[in-house]
Image 1 (spheres, helix red, strand yellow):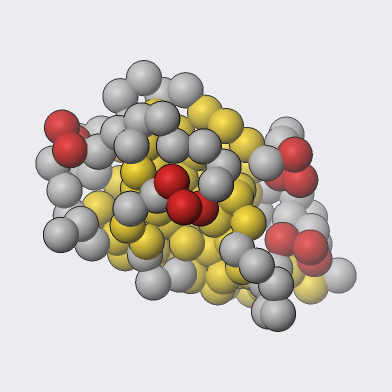
Image 2 (cartoon, helix red, strand yellow):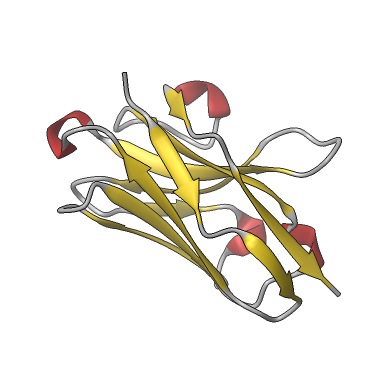
Amino acid sequence: QVQLVESGGGLVQAGGSLRLSCAASARTGNIYKMGWFRQAPGKERRFVASIHWIYGSTSYADAVKGRFTIFRDLAKNTLYLQMNNLKPGDTAAYYCVTGPGWATQDSNDYDYWGQGTQVSVSS
């Protein structure tokens, strides 16, 4: 069983930055793609970004392109999401996910989910 533990959320003013971390309890050889989804109150979970664990190829939701950067530390089995120029619309619980190498922006593609970390952005 893969366990994912997110951290780094918090309250920040619009225009500020946060860095989320996700520590994975799995060997790198068993991780193919990792990413982030987010869910605002009363809304569905939405794709944010993903990265192929080995290749480093990335994918971003249009809403975060140019502001968020997903990256990973292979040695630490840790995924990160650097969030810059945060907007109130970024307010959500952010979830770290893992899935197969072919996983897309569909939440059903992913196998494991973290518990979530809250990001709140004030105007």
